[in-house]
Length: 142
Image 1 (cartoon, rainbow, N blue to C red):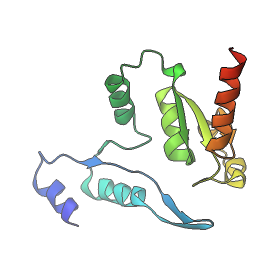
Image 2 (cartoon, one colour; image 1 turned 90 degrees about the vertical axis):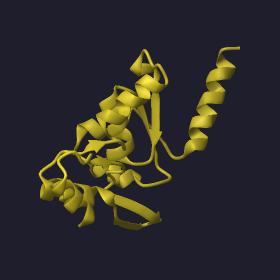
Image 3 (tube, rainbow, N blue to C red; image 1 turned 135 degrees about the vertical axis):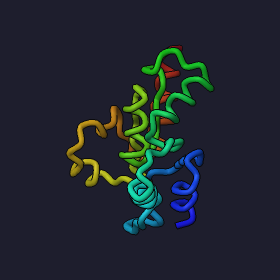
């Protein structure tokens, strides 16, 4: 309510948001409501569009590109465990994407999702799979 009042009373008040997650996994099989819903409610109530500095925003992507002087987006691999935030961020940014199934998204959720924009380029059961792949890749170059 306080944020709403600031936004309504001061036209110069910046509306910055961070995490847009709709759910947070607190343990296996247990998810709770996350900040994304609150951000959406505040945006609707204040009739303002926030500057999103969390995944999957384009604003964050632009900051990353500039900060790390990335020239070729396709040479970046976004690794994450959430479809909307991590894979969505990677896709919005033009990066390659890898979903690890050890966190917020389980294999059945991935298979049930109908949003083609959130289909990762690669899937791994965990980060150890990525490490093994990278080791094998380096060995093949010798």
